[in-house]
Image 1 (cartoon, rainbow, N blue to C red):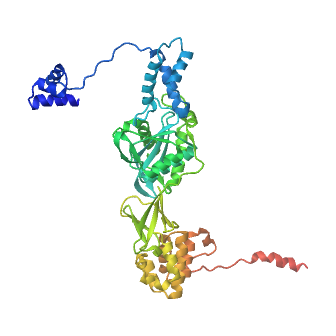
Image 2 (cartoon, rainbow, N blue to C red; image 1 turned 45 degrees about the vertical axis):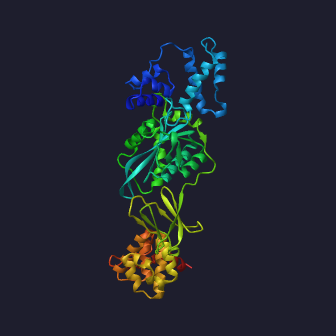
Image 3 (cartoon, rainbow, N blue to C red; image 1 turned 180 degrees about the horizontal axis):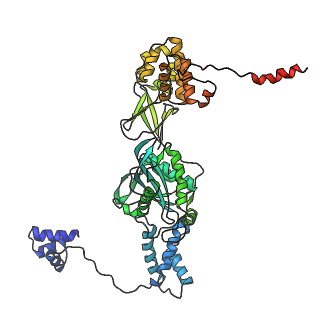
Length: 498
């Protein structure tokens, strides 16, 4: 094509004669004349000849053998020579072609079925292969409506599917969902098809070669599956899972799912999926659950050791001992203020670690922007040992206003006692509960640690009220109680007969 362009350029743009062009390019004069005068450079295709091939009678047999090979180890798959010999021995009545013809056909079919060309999906879905995709949903978590995502792994052969829900589409969500599904199946699909999601693919190089994210690469190696990726912009190449995402959204998440603990909810989704597998396959007439058994036979065994999911990044804590990550703030400890610490990211939690990778605190992972989560225990445990230093810490001004006001008027002994009580309450419950107890106690006219503890026990231990009757006038005012001693009369009467 470059020579055609050169000849056309010399003739049309430079006005050289055809003979001078032929002399310069060393092409035949007639060839130069043909290209110089050609005006139509559209791609021309010749219709295929209708002559039948000698392989036509055995092509379905060859295709079946090659498809079966997808579930065999590489070293036990058919070579072209082996296929030729089997055709001669087993189908000599209908086979009459050369080994060279067989080799050419087998080479072409192998490229289509399981060659290295990425982005090609076989027309027939063999058992043991899976597809994965995310889909957006709305859910209600701890009483709040939030945007979520369903991660769905589908098995095209059996039409089985397993959803798991997350607050994001990040790397940890992807790997956690896959790991949970693998452990439920007790097997790992041999091949898994993905879109070019950033949680797995760091970039696409020459000839479509993917550069994988390190943790995803190690995850795939650990579980042994082969990761295949669709061509950019060709999401339809994994159409089965895209349909399954829609099916799961309509059947499992309408109306919006409501839960307090996302991990408990995800565990329950496996029961929902298995119940759904009791229906018939849309075309095979067999229950999905039965076909799923065939899927599992073709899968890989689950590794004995699970993969530890979590990215670790180094951060510097601010003067309050807090760190910022992805637009949100997580508390650590006043002892690490201004120091380098580490954050280990999971799908649902983050762990804050010190310089020696020892855990400081665990938080729920925040999704969105501008949020802050606080674990008061590391701060209050430190301050309870030095109560007089409380006002001189920047942390003091971050306490809820009622606690700031209450602690500011206490003497050393009562302040120390109240701080230790506050540590106990937030260890067993949370700061909101501790603040409610403080406000109730102050409303009753009391303002000491023992009274706050009484309010706390009343609020958190329902059975405690059985041992401490209260009157409506005040939460700490005991009711008048007269014991009934008549039950002892029987002993007195027994003594009179002696």
